[in-house]
Length: 172
Image (cartoon, rainbow, N blue to C red; front, side, top):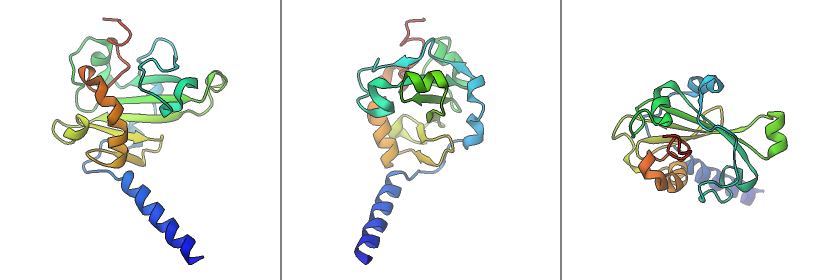
């Protein structure tokens, strides 16, 4: 029993270290609770792997995704403002496991990106990554979560680490 408990503690501490967050963090979960009233960045559900970088992340090939942008970053996302996104931009991605879940509007998985002040997290182009609607699992800097997320998002360097925007949809 002690062997199992020690293994559980080590596993927990390892995972907690991966999910740790550097200060300062962006806004809390109340800031995105009404995200569906924001600008919807994708004209139709985003399906498959339109970027070629998803793999199994964000439910991979089978997922249906919608992306919402708060008013701070809306003009940039629409192609009417320049990159980088302004500080305070929040991007919320809903991910559904497939068409049936999307059609039912089952509770989606949420992943959130928050644009921080210039220089706060240069390792992530000043983005904070958040997993889950409650905003508990967060990452900036070199935390495990931030490194994992940004390893793909850095491929969208020309659009400030964001794949889904007017430029992506050729709306500019």
